[in-house]
Image 1 (spheres, rainbow, N blue to C red):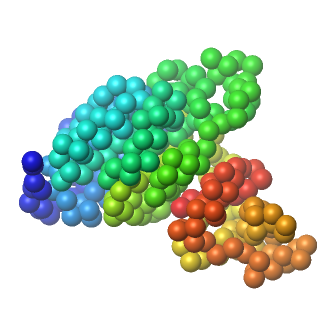
Image 2: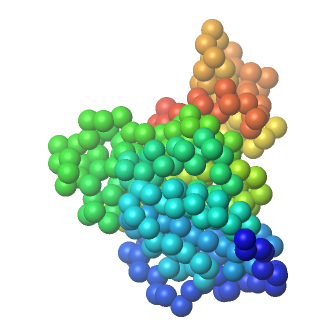
Length: 298
């Protein structure tokens, strides 16, 4: 069995390969790539021990831009390959890169089994709510009404919630971030890497060609404070520019609901304190969707 290589002082440049990044100009993948390359030296792991595994799609090219070992595999099967790699050499630091179609359509069963088995690896799911490489077909996460070459009249299906799927599969670590949150995203990479077992991060990624500004109603600076909630363990679920929005348990129901503090009898005491170990809180918060709820970044 292979062992760990010695750790040397590394920088972000040490994890950048000599390959030209060939994403569309303005693609959110650039920001995700840079965020991870900046974070990698902090893991205190020799780059010879990192392995990136991907399937098919725009996200799958990610590993070409990382100066590490990597396997570009087949559509949806990256988690299965990654499991084999980790079982063969548990000392390796394995990262799985998936798109929403790659990981939640043809590959959903493989993603499920990695999570339920709690295999020690990091799974990053880039979610642009569209099939980019397939020229804009609607994907499992596309919202109702999404028009695409494969659904010109608009999707009539309910979208899959990636985080709700991961929690339902038994994942112990589930997080969500977005390509533009360049402080939050590295923090999630660090926490996922520090978790022993399967770590799942959904990263909302803008596709400038086929689904541009899909997340603008939550990420634009003008509306971000009112439409995002940054979830932290031990802190109240408050949001808004003035911190006057919050989530409470709806009276008579064990369901989260958004309220304005000071209105309709809602007080700060009613606002839920987030407990990242309480799955009963995690499920409804992940299922919450805009525009009714602020989007949670955890």
